[in-house]
Length: 323
Image (tube, rainbow, N blue to C red; front, side):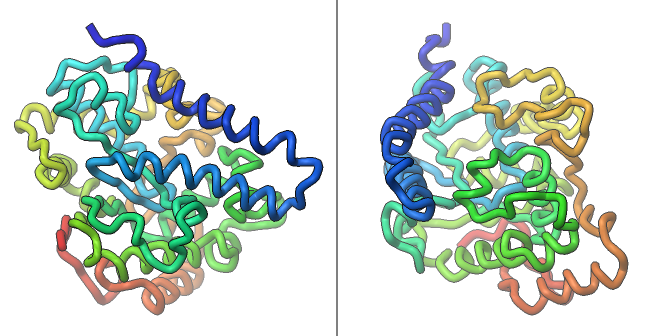
């Protein structure tokens, strides 16, 4: 039987981190300038992440809204099937490892705060020597999903510490994607930073969201081989079926993963745009813009994004590339 302490480990860890930050931040807030308080909060979050990074067997890095929750559900289901673990809880760094040592400690990160603690702002030295999975998605789809995350799901404090606009009323989706620093600019800068550093890592597996959508079983199989926990065809197909868009949407509507730290809970069940599992459509960004706006967005991507990811209109990269 799975120990209760292992099942609730992610929730307890999240609560502990929040309490630690509260104890340090709240008493000092009245006496600290807003920018210094933000810097301290980012430093504390970076310290928490660096502790996990140091212990991690595998690091999965992605910009927000690149398919991380989908991948997390697939990996969770795979290890559930392989090791007879509870279906109720998603993998959360070391909780599955605590239940069964055959499951690696997987650190999922958006790489938001590590540098605020380590000081390694212009490189990825904190990740050197680590086995890194870089989960990527077309920057335009990411930026549109970020817009809806910002409008309907993002906590006010996260907007402040990650430099997102305070209010949604005056910002259109095109303005956010094309002209706000939190849109395409931030997404592409993130991807280019990792492209420059990928050869300095212990190993790097580039996993494209679009390839996962086209061949989820093949993509998951390649990932598991890289991680070092290869699966049988039945286990892989079971994980893929469980993590289908339709099933994940249903599970979120049922608040099934109640100890997932809120990552799989709809903010407003009457508003489809507030769901974590929103659309998942490859190239869905085109539905929000005119043809001229789409051309402007794609031109921006072509001019600025490293071609290794295969998202320029004139460049194709192999899927699941490993360096």
